Each structure stands twice: as structure tokens, then as C-alpha cells.
Amino acid sequence: MSSRISAAMWNQLFQMSARAGMGLQSQIRQMLVSAILDERLMRGAAVPSSRELAEGLGVARNTVVLAYQQLVDEGYLIARERRGYFVNGDILAPRVGSQHAPAHDTPEWVAGTIAPRDPATPDWEGRYVVRPSGQRNIVKPIDWQKYQYPFIYGQFDPTMFPTADWRECCHKALTVMEIRDWAPDMIARDDETLIQQIRTRVLPRRGVWADADEIVLTNGAQQALYLLADLLVGAHTTVGIEDPGYPDARNIFAIRTPKLVGLPVDASGLPVDDRLSQCDYVYVTPSHQCPTTTTMPLANREALLRRAETDDFVVIEDDYESENSYSDIPIPALKSLDRSDRVIYIGSLSKSFAPGLRLGYIVAPAALVAELRALRRLMIRHPSAFIQRSFSMFLALGHHDALLRRLADTYAKRAEVLSAALAAHMPEVSFVHVKGGASCWVQGPPTLNANVLAARAKSRGILIETGDIFFMGDSPPLNRFRLGFSSIRLEHIESGIIALAEALRETMLEG
Image (cartoon, rainbow, N blue to C red; front, side):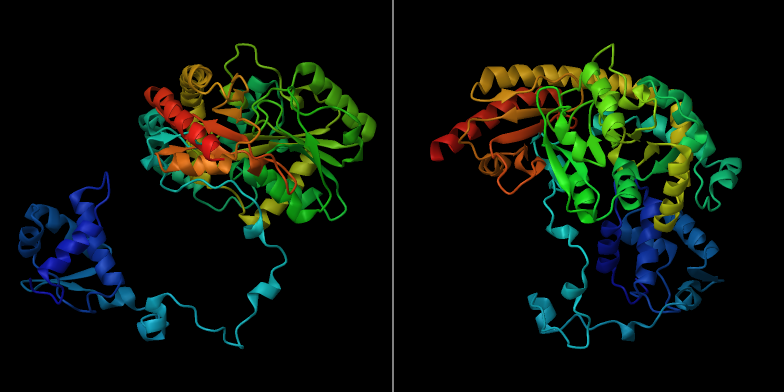
């Protein structure tokens, strides 16, 4: 082909550009853009003729012609009559020359060794104020979808994703009128239509009523916790945390205060006792306690609110997995019982739908929400306005409610199969009966080390989550683990438990 790139290289670039769901024209376009921007093609260089490239790649000539025309329209190529197509040198004009790039082709770089630190460079180790990387966190394999038995929590099931419904809402959000509405910088505002949907469609299911100025959107429930900790927690603030509890909440609060109080949970979740009196804030997951999945009874919720008033502390309610209840009579949220603004409510819109969308919210007094908006502006200004508008339509068209019904039915069936399989094949363990959500908390024999079990199980295509990460302190119990079932197929659950039971017995014999 008439270019400094060989035919074999064009084929290699074409294969590298291939993605699931991408058409041939888009692949050719991406291949050429990469070749130009990565400077594989020199400025002014000729690209192969449409016939030549089509023959080399084994595609229709018209496909190449359309890709070339699009790249001409966007300034990547220049068409010269009877001469062909050439790289537009101006497309690279704003770029700093490659001669300024660091020389990464030295033997030390290739060998993977690290050269001694230049004394002139900053000592980053000495500059860190905090070290988040040193905290204990839940770790999930990136390639979890390749495992036959992924008993991990918090990942979606591709077979349950409402692709057509979500695509419809995204398309509606991309009309000219809608783009004019959400494309400008919203600064500290949120999409009014989504706030309205949360007020009228989402919160009432939990018995919560709020005005628009009492709701602020976040990049997932996790950012909601971070904002609250930034705004309300200082070095002398005492925060009560469920033990075991949500590790990321613990880590977020621990960055800001050393005064964390572990509150051991029981069969009813967080106990309401004198230990709460020392707290300024109490973080709680009453709907489905993380990780035990127990639900706080109504009487305990009312007692917690009375205690908050008496001892003057504020409750941070993470309504974790409340949307995935199998009961026809759900217990009302703490916030719905709150009459004195003692409860800050955190919810998620995307956790069950698609965790990668990262869309959550906080319900709190208007004055507090105003400060949260001001703080959020300094961090990210606002979550993606396009995602907000698309999700607003997803709610308004009833897709979200329909999805939750399907998920509840699917999860209930998976929970039933999982419970039966544990009872039949793993009599050595005890577990909390699953009444909602998408995970099961399991306790093994006292001598079990779940970390050893998890490693053995992983080598057999089984993923489980060890339980020690959820506990505070330096000596957490090692015989607990969590089995998630949001992303494992129903027909794989029992065979996965049978395989896990074999791994458990081998672990116990060797231990």
C-alpha cells in the first residue's frame, strides 16, 4: 500500500481497533485517527487509496470511502483531486513535539527497574497527609466475569440489564432540546426533573417526603458519605460505626477523626444502648445491615431516634439495599420516622441498576444541603448532567420500577437456591437467612481461615469475599465470609456451593 505503514501493520491496527458492537466504518475511522494522533503517519503523508485499503482489510470499498469522507469533514484528512487523501498536518499543530517526551526506552526502563530518586524531585512519601492506599479495603478481581462461580457482591448481571430501556432514555436525552437543557454547566444545581422524580417516585416508597431544596445528588452513595465527612467530621468528632460494617464508610471517617467507636451488631442490627451516648454521629445501615444483611426492627428504629434526641447525636442512615426487599410490607426508613431532623438519609439510584453509573443522593435539612452543594461544587461541581437527565426519563417512563420488580423476583429465587444449597452441602457453616438484598453472610467453623478458603476457591473458579475486612480492630475473626449472588446465574449456584464445600473441607483438613 502507498504509505509508510505496511499492509501488515494496517491489518494489525485494524484488529486493535475492533470492539464488540463497533461497525467496520467506525473501526476504520478509529484506526486512522490513532495512526494520525500517535504520529505513525507523518504530517502530509498519503494514506492508501480507498480501493487499496479496502482490499487489504477485506472490507467493502464504500465502507472505507465513508470513513475517509468523515475524517475529511473533521479535519484529519485532506482530499486532493486525482491525488488521494493526505494527513492534515494542522491537526497536530497544538501538540508539544515528541522530542520532549521522556526516554522510556532505556535498558533500566525495559527491565522494570526503578532508578534512584533524583534529589531535586519532591519526596512524595514525606508529603502525604493521609495514606488511603494503606487502609484495609474490599478487593474484587477485575476479571470477575471470567469466573464460573462469582459469589461476589455489588456487580451487575448483564442478563438483567435493561439495555433497550436505557438506550431509549439516552436517545431521548440526546434530542436537540434536551441537549440545550443539560449541556450547560449547572455549577451547583442538579437536574430539576430528576429531583422531582426522586421526590415523587423514589422516596415515597421508603415513606420519606422531602422538598427539592432538601435533596442533593452525588456520584454514588460513596461520595455522599465523603461529602458528609468533609463537612461534619473533624479531629475531635466521635463517630459510631457498626462492627462489622461497611469498610469504605469506616475508612472515610477514619481519615478525618481517630475517634471511631465500633458498635458490635447483633441479630437485630445496631443495638440501642449506652454506647451511643458518646457519639456525635452514628452511621447505620438499618434496611440490610452491611454485611450481615439483618434488618433493624421498627421498635429498635424508634428507640434509636429517641436516643438521638436524648443524647444529642445525629444518625447517618445509609438505606443500603432497601430497594431489594423480598417482603410485601417493608419497614419504613429511619428518615420517615424522624420528626426532629436527626437523620441524614443516603440513597442510591444506580447500585441495583448499574453500579458504574455512580448516582446517589442525600436527603437532609435545606441548610445542610446548601452547604453540601457548595462543597460538592469545589470537588466536581455536579454529577454528569446527561446521566441525570437520562435517569430522570428512566424513572418517569416506569423502567426503574419495573426493573426493581424483576430484580426482587430474581434475587429471591437465587437466595432460595443458595440457602438450600448451603443447608444441603455445607452443614459445617451457619448463615443469616436472606430476606432481601443480594448477599448472604456465612460463619464457618471457629478454626476456619476464610482467606485460605478464598484462595483455594479462586483457583477452582469460585470467588467469595472474606469477612475479616468488615471488622474493626487488629484481630478480626477469620471464619466469616460473604456470598454475593447479584451476578451469578441461578443454575450455577448449587454447583458452585458444592465445589466450595469441597474446598472448605480440604482447607479444614490442612488447617
